[in-house]
Image (cartoon, rainbow, N blue to C red; front, side, top):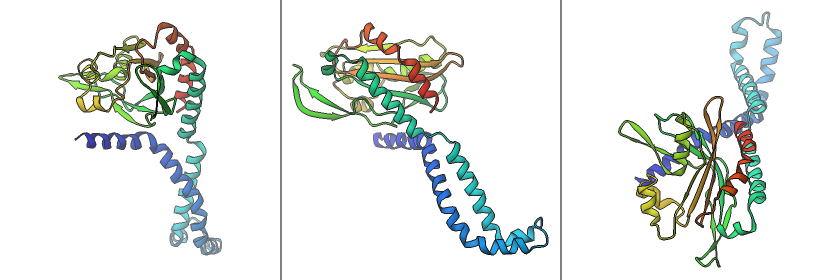
Length: 284
């Protein structure tokens, strides 16, 4: 059952997010191939149309309908590629900004804390009375992490961090209401329910059982909890909200292998950059 859920999440990712890029590529292919197809019919069509007594008659155009179809699709493809937004390039811009941002705010002491950062944005409807889905729009920064043991010594191993364009359902129906799943869910549900958005932090000690804590406190299922990175001890989520429309734009997410990583000083450093993040997200 777990694999089915995972495949379904990937399906949602492609249908909700990648669709713009897929259609853009299709439109580009149409623009490329249409002149080739047009050449097959253009010569005969040109002769017939220019020698016809009237161009308004359907009988004049009917034998050459492929020319009309090709021209229509070519024009649509041109308009789509000309005016559609390139989500891939915007995502690349966003990751470049995250890279600069993290290198600017991380201190030398933060290196051994294995801090990761990424951005999640909502998919589809945003309501406290409906399931909330988020998509990770950029890769984690850093892309890979050097692993340390409990004494802060390098183990020699490297972990690849999460890939972009993953989708997660961060709220679950319980009786007549929806309850949040994880720190992302609590941040998102609070933002879309009309409450004042707040920075949400979490930290727990080494003695805490990770799986049990995620299931009992953060509402994960056992299958979901087992898929999380188990060495995380601190979490931080900063919501970005359009105050005019009361709309959640995105969530800036951090986690770390050290407890008490995200103090108030760290949060204040991060909050200065939220307007720039929100500006880029609104152009997606």
